[in-house]
Image 1 (cartoon, rainbow, N blue to C red):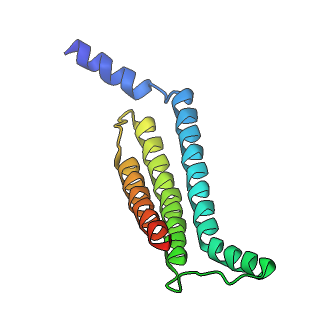
Image 2: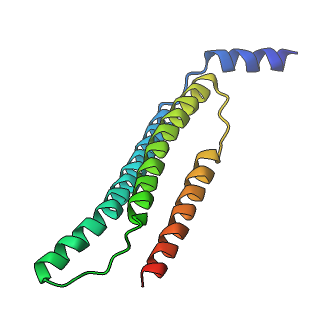
Length: 134
């Protein structure tokens, strides 16, 4: 009984470790950099077909391009994945912050699973698109 009371007092009086909060913030900022990178890549994919058409005009050759516009769809999908990454990373940051304050931290790999699955799906679609355009 005495040990349990001492443990409860230590838990109640314990302050959250600042280094844990700083690590949480660094992780959040890394997720934001990842989100920005994914969105930038999506923007490049969308604009790539426009760039190729402009190069063809400058060179003076007829460029054979797909009229289906898959690059726009894939680029927009990447921008959406980046947006969701930023949103989910913020939610994860806030949840981890609360858990650290309450001394109830539990790790989770949901965000990583969603991000990897989304990027793999878009990558497969990009590969299919590039193979079909050859």
